[in-house]
Length: 483
Image 1 (cartoon, one colour):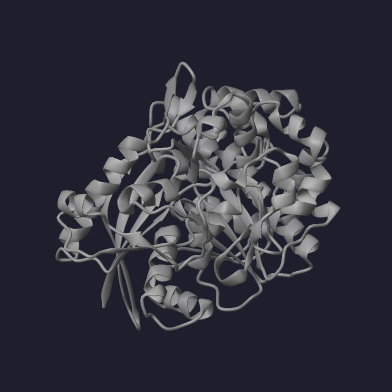
Image 2 (cartoon, one colour):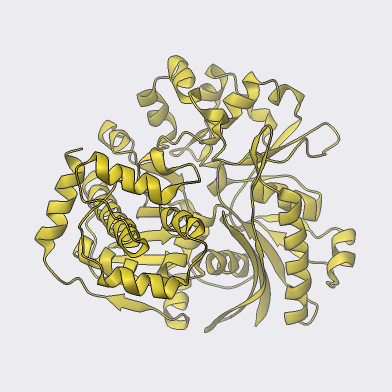
């Protein structure tokens, strides 16, 4: 039995988990959880990355306490696309911009004037999102910030650098920058040159499982850990780690990684780069062992999280129970609409969208919550159906992993909408995938299927069979398609 620390950073909170792994054992214990609160300053919305780093150090100290002062490895995963800029001394030039910041508004159109959107998709396979790293870098280049930078590090790579003093760019996260060719799994040099992007800003690419340095003496002193403690590159995009921990027993499965975002799709051996795929806004991100995460981004539980915040954080269990009793599919909205991207006034914006589309306007928290969950289930249905058609890959089961597995109503509605069984769990899929990649790098035998069998055998799972009238879901989907 060995002990691994998984640093798993989400858009609203971070956690450090201790995983204990043996041939037939996979145990995960939370060592420390801390908030991730972005800060709005005069120049825009920024991540408080120093508070995040402090949370990581506190978490490693707590992890050491759970593991007897000795960790066999540390790995870091986080959300994608955002980055920090370093100067010539290796110092951070400022707090990283938040992907919901408005500085990229209108930037995509400027990029497309040089490289049309269809050509950009053929080169990188990335779906359009206004906050893609490419658009953020273009905004920073136009503002003169890139010219002052010596290095650009994506968020998990930045924290790894602070822990170890070594710089690298992990591949699964690099694939979300819109600067990687998913066929060659390396940088798209020609594309970057046409767009004036200096790929020399990035540190050398790392693969999941590669060594990423050892904890600096100062970090050992602050955390009380006994060195040396290696840091291992994992699937540092949290979705890559979560997909690695999907407890599938075969290949005919779809997955939905749920949380602030829902990421719904398939695991493939090669990217899908057709014009039809681009029009459907599917992305080809890189995964473990040469795989492609073919998926669509859906706004996810962000919609409900923002509503709950506006309502003063009511008891979620009571709210979901009331939502379960509210009329089904009375009103639905497009959960992919960028109109819901920014924070603030979410209940009002959902009501406005229903009013504008001629549907009954949900008024109570329970009605709005039911509208959100029905809409998410519809978005899950559409993504899974589209992925199967575009990739010519039928599926028999949908695996839901991540924080949304705690929401039984959402899981049940997703099964009903998709007309497929849903297997929900594990909740901490990203942390488990993080731990498993570390364990494999440090001697745990087995391929990806073996890792998934270990998850299926050791983690609690719930199964939801589809029920009810499929025609009601088709009718609701048609209502959305008409708009």
